[in-house]
Length: 224
Image 1 (cartoon, rainbow, N blue to C red):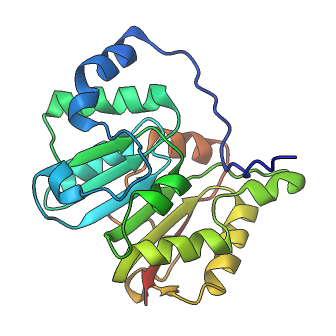
Image 2 (cartoon, rainbow, N blue to C red; image 1 turned 90 degrees about the vertical axis):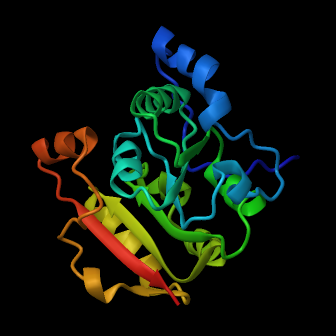
């Protein structure tokens, strides 16, 4: 019997609007990266050499659009399996004529394993990943020891990892996994999990959680 890998996401595409379809038709050649399982030359993809920031699971792209405008000296790789969100972000990027973002509509683990070279990343950002809050589903959570080891292999020494969640039990889980990760240590400049770092905006998704009474935790760690 073939064992299928555990996925940290469920593919819920939702309604694909005409505008989102047009984004793929008109803008994928500029912003999209087709996964082919081989090491990617990101200097060629962006047309320059700059620090690379990976955002995993960017949703509708609100944060990534902000980041690309606020941090023009850095290049951003976004990975999101839900194509409507990818289309929405591409429309935003094209509307602002931004050139420092490239996108995968693919599984982040496979992208990390096969397309991103060791030490290629300056930073990884994972904001509000699926909490898989039912105990029997906790194993599906993206933030696990093996995954942090994979990230450490792709982030340069001195680089950064930033996690955020609005689920208390996932925050405890993140804190525990990070504490046992041999190549990550808390960033002394962002030691409090209660303070949102200045580069992360308060998104629509986050505001909805706050209205429901959720607290938000931010964990910023540095690569040894």
